[in-house]
Image (tube, rainbow, N blue to C red):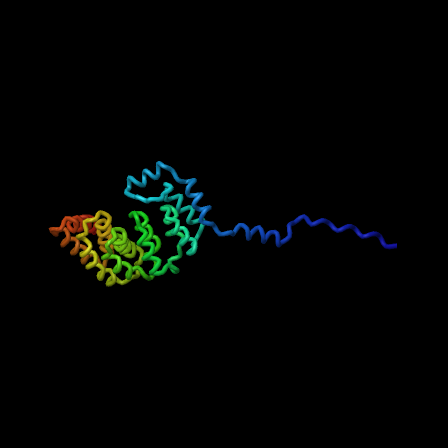
Length: 246
């Protein structure tokens, strides 16, 4: 007589499909309503008032500090489609996030024009130029196009972008920046506050490049002697920085 078989032991470990399902659930992409809700939780009236003191006037703002937005953007990672949806909400903080999470390789000239037309304060204008637009292959084309635009923040964007490219694109030939100096000279007479400050930023940024510094200082000296108040301010502001750096 053969002895009875021992009953099979019950499995105590979860099956592999269960673990894969759990992993898949964790990788669910973030949605815009959830991101807006998180931004709203971090916002405060105190920080909205602080934005206003620094001239950041946005029709829709939660009042979230930049380090918090950068942490959220880092957690999200790069997502071109999500960036477009965040921008479309019109919220200042959502647009700031869109700048950080968008993929420069997928940004088109048409998108740059659309976003530039939406600029309504210097912070979102400069942020888009400094963290996204300057990393695209379309930067110099937009500098030339926007430098004569009638809108204050689109025109500022031309020179914020020029300053950003001068800082970040170290391998770009100096000739590309020398060709931009006439744009700086023409725009220096614009009396609007955010334009003239952008023009000064561009002239100072370009002038920090060793191969362009001499020409930038010469232009700043010429502007400083101008009879036009805005041009004179731009020239003097740039000279203080460039001669100090030298």
